[in-house]
Image (cartoon, rainbow, N blue to C red; front, side):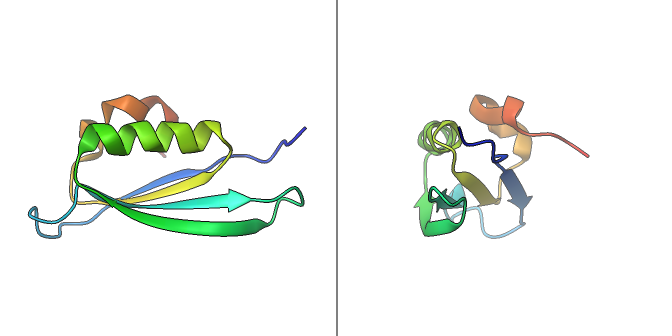
Length: 84
């Protein structure tokens, strides 16, 4: 059983609102718990971004989000975020 902790990181940047809702990096790990693949995707729809983030987290991928939106707009995966 894989006990590796899955990470979700969200960065808010004040870039042009005409750009994508978010740029997301998905990191996939192999059986040896080392990264084997990183994909980067631009999302233009908040709901679609949220669906893909939740799916990736549930599959054991690390997810890093760069967005020009306030973190509070991402209701679909808000419970996965921990504020420090």
